[in-house]
Length: 130
Image (cartoon, rainbow, N blue to C red; front, side, top):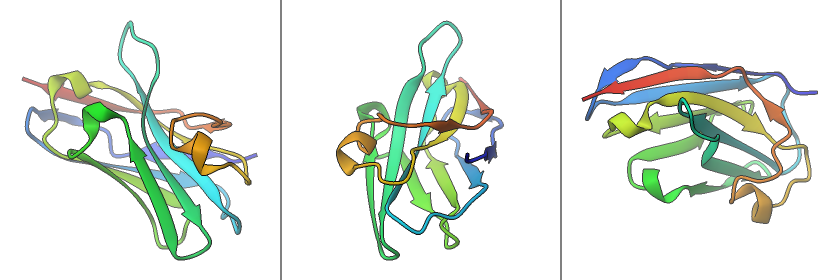
């Protein structure tokens, strides 16, 4: 079992930036997949970004089209923390943001499209005003 704790959500004006952080309760020694999802009121949960670590040196990233060029997902040095840097925020980015992780052994094919995530955090609220 992996516990995930998000932080960094806030209220900002359109055009602003925020950095979300997610801490995992354990460090993985094999290839692993983590990501960010969001859910706005009245809407279904949406995959936002994923990061896939291969060994200790290589990471792959993938994003939903609506955030490409504005959001950046990254892995912390300790490999048990990921970040989501969000720039040029828009009102439509307003949502509860959730960190998620897949079990060890997940493939890039599933990770890169927001599938196969098994563990979830409690979420952190991001509100963007116009």
